[in-house]
Length: 300
Image (cartoon, rainbow, N blue to C red; front, side):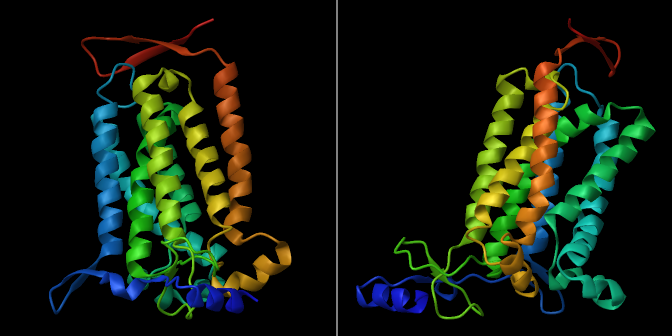
């Protein structure tokens, strides 16, 4: 039925875009003996931009961490993103990799999970917070504002790679697209949907809340809204994104994709943090002019 609809659309004069006609390539720099992919540069750009943004944020009064802590977070969070992302992909999407260490470490072949990277990042924050005597939740608030930039670059890289495409559609929207290796029918460019919702929209909301409101004085509010916002965006886009081939049967039997199932606990956790932050009194922060530390006293 969908094939007939697509054919009818073509007869009516609507010709979908073809990914190959955009002239995109997964390779950003090819030196002959060594190639750098856009996916790698996306990770690097997201981490560096997050580090720069965090540096600006912690220079504001009442920051829960100093520059030395940000430097530690830059290192450990990078490890958490890479190791957690790869292990999360193996656990949630490709369990066969767990029995094949040689394939598991081939990061250049693709296969990273946001949820795994999130777990790795949380563990990195917990480690740095414990070592530095930092407030874990407030540190997470500051990191949460920096994450959407990385999500934006990562999803754009997925699009440039021509991977993680959307579901087949008979829509005549001008941006539906035929992807290589996905058959002749037009599909949603769901990578771009995710880049907009998870990256631009969520990032703009958190950025405005941090700089234009007193949200950062309510521990757990920013990280709660990030978690809830990401989960809602991902859950929505999954209706337009093609499930991973190895999990297509699982999605058909369960009614939801693996990505959607993984967002459900995130919704509950994010909502819980946000509600708790709103019903609790905000912090009153006094800055010591001769020190990089701050004292925090709840306002009754």
